Image (cartoon, rainbow, N blue to C red; front, side, top):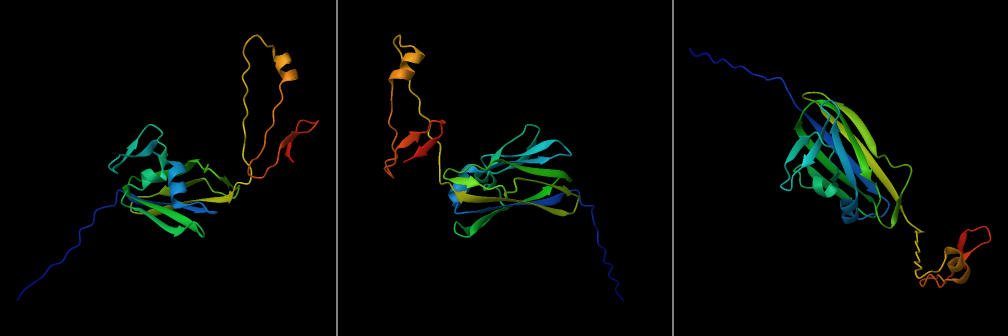
Length: 193
């Protein structure tokens, strides 16, 4: 006669899993998003920030650390789906991290040639318990920029006063793509004609 005894030994979970997703829509390419967007990932309970080494090792440090998508891409749990036409979803899974209240804040949304819309969600906070999973979802909605900023600077040297320069110097500003010239109205506003 034989007896078989089975037993399960469980240890109490001491860590959890945090998933961070970032959706980007509006014609932005993966390269543009990965090259421009930056974030901080903070465990508010411990006051520490996620830091990623060149080798892709994650650690938590006291100094605020700004990470780009290109930094997060070094982690094993990084995945990108989608395309520029329909939008991208960037996902990062951070496993075996301390429980706490986590906040992810987007620090830079600026992408050259695009304007971030007010409907973008650039910060999120979730509580993560030991043995649990939590997800923070952020999103950027972009439209292609239709205008830009032109800065014109003229330096005058050689004993000419500001008043003399303002009274004597004139300039022509032309958009060589459209052929339009910049005109300044009596009220001081600029318009293209």
